[in-house]
Length: 308
Image 1 (tube, helix red, strand yellow):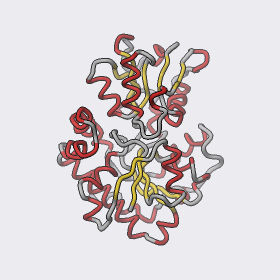
Image 2: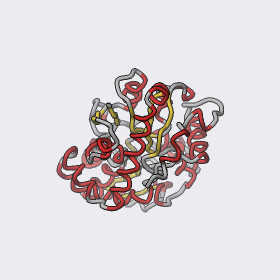
Image 3: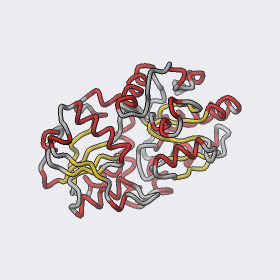
Image 4: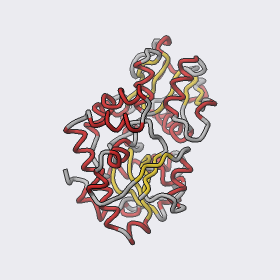
């Protein structure tokens, strides 16, 4: 079985990646490999085209290739809540949560993530146009397969951007190197709180796989849940995964980042959370109209989410 993620040197989709590396998939009877397919649109299209069996992506990302959720379902969450962080150049002296200080700044984000940042700023009462906030993609981050968080950290160091909105590993590296400071972390209580429900990391599969090979779908959920449990018991297991897949510095940082994420390691896809996510998808133009919960989530497997 092939599992694709759009971002590998990252904590974003770490539970599904770790489920392969640490052997949880194998224990559940799945012979899986991890594939990095970037950019995100290509990753989701690979699921549509049958080139991969599962994707670990933002919960609303399948809409990029499956309009109105036709032909795809979410199997489980990898963790709860919006998971991107805003880091700004340390020398700017911007305090935690001070979004007003972003006026006139140049912030890097891939377009899909940048859409979330735009909605955050709108919810905080800011207009990008009147505030002169520019959201850009650094040239180095445009190449297929390039890790955006690491490329953004390089751009921050070079001074070509004022900050970036990206995954926790990229943010941690910028903070570790003392070139960036954390300004916004929605997961850990920063405002606007409504943004927590915009999305979450999830695992998705096609309706075809779910209908024809439901045991595989169930096994993947059990593997993710098992891996979440393993990491909660021993966060240092994250370092083992990092040493297999990451550069040396990021391998050293990943256990710290994962430990910070552990309170959000829950495989559930609650109906209120899906409703909020779909509203966000409508707000950014990825979805039209309302859909029932069962049109989005493979709810037949919901008993497996709590199998800790």
